[in-house]
Length: 232
Image 1 (cartoon, one colour):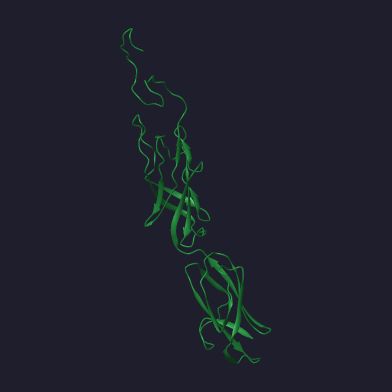
Image 2 (cartoon, rainbow, N blue to C red):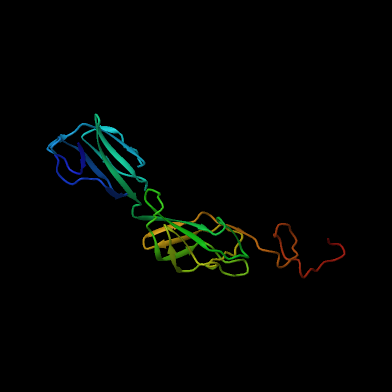
C-alpha cells in the first residue's frame, strides 16, 4: 500500500484528509508499505490530481502542493497498480483586499442615492467566502462638491453584514453631486482596503435655466443685459 505522509522515511503524520488555505504549502511523501504494514521506503511514485489548482503532476518520492484557488479535489500517488489518495479541502487565504462596486455598476446619477457592494478577497484573487458576519468598514472618496456647494454623502464608516465574503452598505447611504468628475470610493478595514473604478456621475433632471452668451454652459450669464440698437 501507499500512505501519503508529511515527512520522509515513514515518519510524520498521515496527510489524508488535508485541509489547507491558499496561503499554505504542503510537502507530501509516498510512503510504501508491504502486506503486513511494514514500511518499505518512500516510493518513486507518479503524482496526479483532480479538482485542485494548480494541477499536480510529476514523479518522485515527494511533491509540494501550493494551492492558488479554493477548489477541493484529490491528490494521488501511484506506483504500478497501487495508489495512495489524499482528499484535499482548500479554503481562501487571509484577507488581502476588497473590491468596491456601486449599486448601478459605477454609473450613478446626482439625483439618486445608492449603496455600495464590498467583496473580500485573498491574495490569490479568491472571494473570501469565510469572511462573514458584521464588520466595521470605513469609507472615503475623491468626490467633491457640486457647483452650488452641495457636498457628496459618503459615510465615514458603517457596520456591514457579510455573507460568503460579500456585503452591502445600507440603502441610499451614498450620493454624488458633481457631474463634472469621475470619483472613486475606497472601503477599508484596518490595513486592508479596496477602491472602486472611476464612477461616471450623470447629470440630474432639469431644475433651472440660465441664459448665457456661449454654448455648452460656457461664457457669461447674460442677465442683466445692457445693449444699444447697434448691438446683437
